[in-house]
Image 1 (cartoon, rainbow, N blue to C red):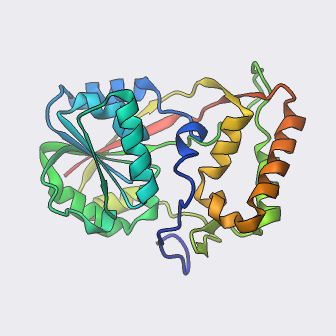
Image 2 (cartoon, rainbow, N blue to C red; image 1 turned 30 degrees about the vertical axis):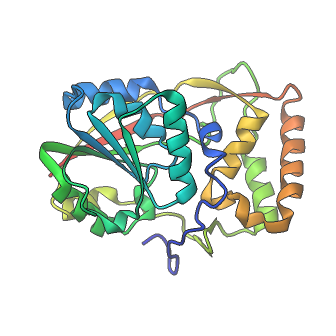
Length: 277
């Protein structure tokens, strides 16, 4: 799927769930607003967010549906999603620890199914075929292309220094080796692309694409540390007994880059593809 020998295993995001909500920049309200307008969402029907993590997108969209179901293979991510939903007072959500490959899993029909920063971890042809059978008449599959752990480089002046992402990457490689780690294996060639061909082969038509522009956000050093640990390629478990030393070196690097402990970034634009069965 995503490499010559890589296979999913349950340790992919081990230890990352607690860092994810702080380390990942939130999806903007504009994303929910545009989706509601494009799909005529009116508070009825059901949402299925596949690979929901701690519910970052699920909770943003839940108010546009009668019920929102978040599905993820990671136990800690599902627990974190439930905790965040309770804290936010969102009561129309349900959280299920299920691998996407097990769909339809008796879950019934949905008005909208979403994937956000998750599809590339799955057996994509199998999951796409299953999801197509789960959509109600007039329903849609929504693929959100986003990068939320870091922003984009640019020449513009920002209120605070940009996080030193290149140096952070070098530090991670110094501790974990030059090949990108993922669970118990590695991804020497990165994750797979070509989503459009997968959707079309599964019988979907489209896509209709729209984009949400980037925005400037401020982040603390703690936010940036959390972003590093929110990634599968630098999940806490990968460092083993070296975790504390790595974090100490990471925080020293961040302090050198910004003694105030504050950073600014411009987020990458979000592209959204809508597919119909």
